[in-house]
Length: 300
Image (cartoon, rainbow, N blue to C red):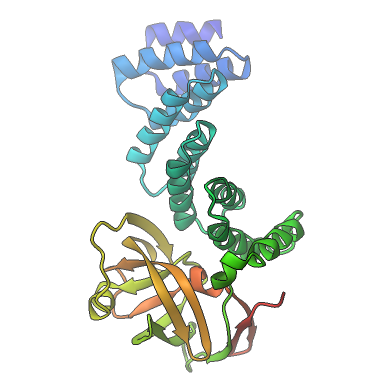
């Protein structure tokens, strides 16, 4: 490390050298050294997001949670679409007992990267700590959908069944069955969807979207109240789009029906009315038979 420190004295804004020095000090357990040299670099040379990866971890190691949160916030500012940075800040919030902001960051991270394996568990734990056990079902069910048969999934399935069995969580289980036909020469399944008892339009079935997504025009048609609703970023088959978070009282598709469905309203959907995402689909069992997608009440 002596040579690296000498390099930094000669070239104080050498980014490669500061990363090598910070990493070496971190691996040696010199977390204060990391923070000292990084602070000097930031002051003289300006921000360097890659260096904040290391200072974030160093602050955590010395229990400087506010500073670790600040590092994560800076990283989110530098790249708002990076799910990892949202998750990092959520971990700090959870550690300090700020469950509301932890849940917010975990939700946003999962919206940006639906296939995450660890944060759905964190989010479910936070919901249960908040006394919202029914809300924990969606991230756990999404984890099961994407994880397949990896180790630990059986325990997650058991946890979901336990939550669904609670009387207050009866709304979380979808009812009915339907068969959706894929149109000729199309690679997507389409579904006629009703929202809150009103015929809405044709939605694309999108297992890559965490939430049901409605076009702005559809939300206006349904007279949804978006005043004060949270803004969010969501991953869809068409990429990342900006949306407004809402909860739909009821969503129906042919013979399927479920209640209290988290959703987003977005103006980035092009000509389609909406996306039928995982906040609806995980309430059911899905299996594909050629050009037919079969959906039915999940077996218990």
